[in-house]
Length: 114
Image 1 (tube, rainbow, N blue to C red):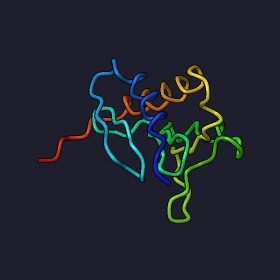
Image 2 (image 1 turned 30 degrees about the vertical axis):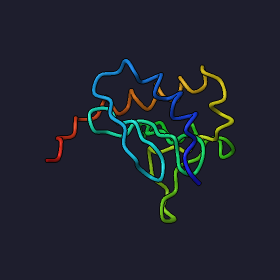
Image 3 (image 1 turned 120 degrees about the vertical axis):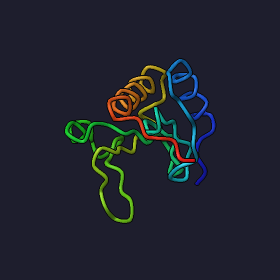
């Protein structure tokens, strides 16, 4: 499944004013990085992929619209798969994007590869 280009455009609008934003194809989708750290992505599996603080991630999971990301049969702590129905309104999407950007910004900047 290809990522949702409309969702990517909506994300792009929300992060447009952020410093250090880059876009990169990642996990079959389009990721938005802050200083080299993935914050949020239009997922290739549909919906949104959000990077959050692993210590608080469990409290955000409802197993219906928000699940822990699974990669190669392994749960990825701090990575959440958010169903498209949970980001239908601008306010809903903004909440998730704000979480992802805030966590990515809290991480040390990654050095650019040459």
